[in-house]
Length: 113
Image 1 (cartoon, rainbow, N blue to C red):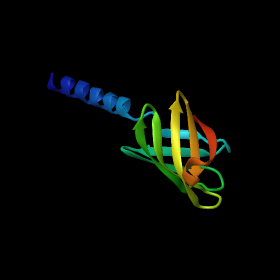
Image 2 (image 1 turned 60 degrees about the vertical axis):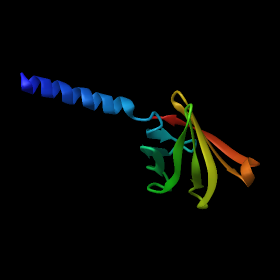
Image 3 (image 1 turned 135 degrees about the vertical axis):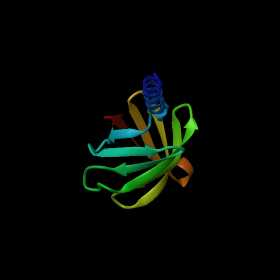
């Protein structure tokens, strides 16, 4: 009896942990076709997993509420870091990097794998 209860409790805790994961976490297909992995807890790290810059960390984001995230995004081609933000909408993630206080921005949309 104790063993069945323990197994049921363990299964419940595992499923609850999965349900509590932030929807931004996981693998994303970038606009260039590479795979980027977003992982973390309170602060999320973005690392390229495929393509020319595989293994390079290109950003960090924190949750800002309502499926919005803010932080820094680094262009892997020139190593310049920009003020970044992301907005999650279903299986799409709109990423933006800006300079000059948001005067000049570049955006792209990633899709969840």
